[in-house]
Length: 450
Image 1 (cartoon, rainbow, N blue to C red):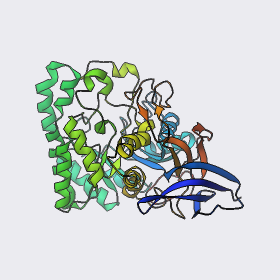
Image 2 (cartoon, rainbow, N blue to C red; image 1 turned 90 degrees about the vertical axis):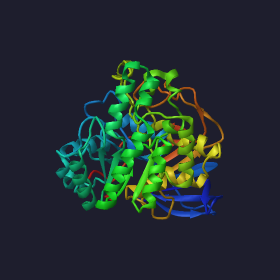
Image 3 (cartoon, rainbow, N blue to C red; image 1 turned 45 degrees about the vertical axis):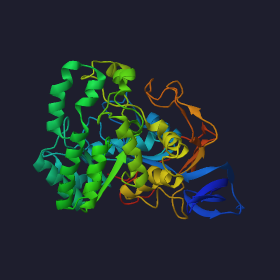
């Protein structure tokens, strides 16, 4: 049965400016974009002359770990993501290794039942002991493979090289947590006795990040592997990426909201609730990251969502859980501090939020685009009034947020996932189970048999 939805009075970003028009959705696809209204539709969604964008895609979020379901799960995480303007999220391993098809199958089955949005799964953590499992995951559509250059999941040099070679062979992306383990050890020895949160953040330096980026960059150059640097946090790291690109390295980069906003000095106010890795740096680093996001050095915004219950956060700093809830603030954060404060253009907003993540993961233009023939993953932003962030109203599983009280513009007014209306007029109207598995080869709707 054909079901047709028209999104009318939409502000569309075309050729560097807004144009008012209408979008026609037929079942799960965009089939028309016009200044004229469409006839013969079953349902009309009014955009109220607000911006309409392709759904955001978060390529780095810790959503579901079968041993840490009290932290986040597919229902809470995907719902928070939807209210953050995301129609797709890639789950990154948290503690349980995703290095075989049985664990992968479990993650996909949970997402299929409980996710409100589209879902991808990254493999990891790969090292000298399990790199040979990469082809097994590739056969099931996995695109991203996580490798650590440092504790707690450090790969040695041989394991890293062999993993990157197999990632190249399966047309995957090596997703690297880039911090130099030797410099981390040095920093911990220097700062551990101080025992405060600011000292913790100082212990993992910009130099540690840059050193690791340069090392894996040259590995990728020699092996010819597609490289992705996760959660870049410093000006030194940005400079390292620029140098690698000048040498012809195929590398993409993501940045997280917390590294674009908080500094290590801010952590004194929040304590271990702002413990995370890579660590927070200085105000100069924050400025450098925004500049790199604007000029194209950084390709994507990613959440690195990794919340935990209070009892895991309220511990001595070296024992406390590292990570915060980020999914629900993603789009509004980027719109408010990026577009509204003129750090980035609206076109750049769409690129780093939607288009580039889809390209990195190999699902563009099916995802990440407002084009005829693209999937109807569509978000209407509310740019006229601010929404206050609060743990009492957010959809994450935890009852706290470091973003408490922040007023953000660009919240989700309407959201469609594969043509299904999930959020309408800021309220949840859809049900879980409407997303599809984002494998590197576009699938038919539903779970791909494993």
